[in-house]
Image (cartoon, rainbow, N blue to C red; front, side):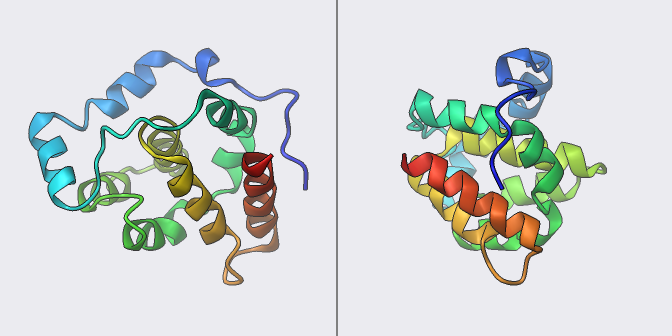
Length: 143
């Protein structure tokens, strides 16, 4: 599988209000709680090159990532905090849940966290399409 780079919505084309609303979930009190739980929401160490990789795979990310199935793994690996996991679980629509994960990975996590995410997707318990997407994304991040 090759990550689609042609007709994807780039993050800049997505309604910025959507992401501002999502980030508003995390006020100062929540940020302190997240740091206390071992996850620092304010870590913004993802290189713009890697943000571009994510942006180019946005459509596939939203349609392929099995949000409900991977939440516990993301929480266990400390990629998501308890609060973030709960917030995502409370979303009704799958696309909104996946968009939340995308936003957190893109804007608040390190390359190491993103690579861990790719490894999670490659687990045998997930569908072949999910595994291939994880491999594709991992390979693009390593080049």
